[in-house]
Length: 625
Image 1 (tube, helix red, strand yellow):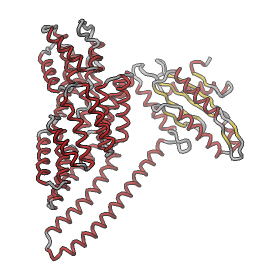
Image 2 (cartoon, rainbow, N blue to C red):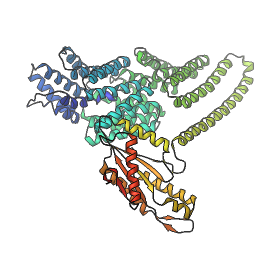
Image 3 (cartoon, rainbow, N blue to C red):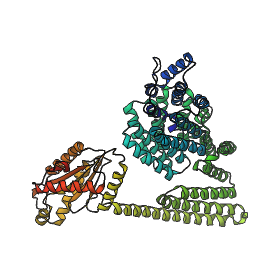
Image 4 (cartoon, helix red, strand yellow):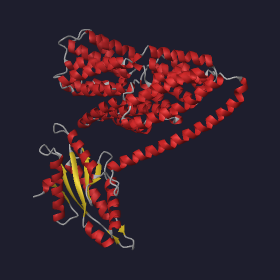
């Protein structure tokens, strides 16, 4: 849960140089470059800061405060969490009413990180929102952006996934405008964490790997380590244990940049949890015990105690299981912010399994009922309508089957010995019935999911080409235009039309004309980037949206697409071959053109010009005489 807190400080300092009017330079510590130096090599630069601080006991107020903030940045990257909290506390003591907002908002942000690490999520959210308010008032874009991003991550820790996704999507829009590799990598990592908690592991891995690639591009080892830890954790949740173990071992090697050996707790934590969940409890228990001696965060220790309890249940050491579970519960009692989350609710599930293992079926039934009721309520509260339909229904059905079985077992325990034979027979019939019901529920669930996917596909896809349909591509067009603010960013579009398509239909027949449309659609899609979009807006007419593409790059894409289509050899049912060409009209946003209507009309006029002047050509609106 500490994912973001160890790597976001550097960006704010990048903003301080632009947000303040001047920065005093010093031969031993250059405040303009020190943040970047710390980011690449935290330990040697932290030593330089300490030496500078010892030799400069008296500094101007503003420079002294900036020195403390640089120290806090390095301490956080080195996992010197106690020193980080003390430095932030010392910085807070010297704040006055005359302290610039750029520094006070940053201190609120740091205090939010400290509260988040403690598990005081409500207080953390208050600090982040205060930092955002101050930053917005003074136009401190970097601080505002990072506080908003951390706010999204904090909400995901309390299972508020919908709220966290809304917050991070807004942050993503701002980062695109800044075109900052580091910021975009941070957002990808935040997406990875949120989707991992939501159980969407494939998407989580995708975003974590994008984040890792971004960090490797700018050579930031501490952040690479954090992304690798996220990948390993997601593989663990996904139950792909071998991949999880390999990445946890890679993470342990990657954190060698810091002399703080206590940080090996997280690598040991990941290995221990993975081995325990894999069922290798004899290997997991020694690593769990070792991790618990390394002084990790309380919420992480609670997870270790839960896995320890499960291992002891597996090994039939029930008294030790009860003791480990009690320690986990005690930690959650001291962290009210986690009350009702899936991490705390799991203690009820483990307690039910322990009662079942010790043949206390009545308690097992009661605890299981309480767990599934609270879990399904949580799913209903935190999911979107679609998640609620798919996940809550499945959990409730599984709950009912298990509770029904436990209820019958509790009744069986109280029956006379003479009735046991008959009851065992009844239990067998009940088990068969439960299996049949589970199969029926599973089939219904699969059919429902297929139907839902089909409905979604029909609502946004053109049935012939497989591209976005006219309604959806224009809706997407409108959203991309709205995301362009203050004349920042660009969007290029082009309208593509198949030349002489009526003659193709007349000569070869409509079924073959449909085949031409499908092949042209595939070629168009293959020449675009992942963030680009293409839709069929008419019989043989297509609309392509290319965000962050200027007129020159748009021309290059259109030329590749036109050339590839012109070179494709079409063959009809009689073996006759022929070629087709396309005409294209292009338009790009400008300070005078910022609406979908104007941009589309310009591209349409450019297409008309291409058609009128010989076809098989590309025309910019601005090039029309």
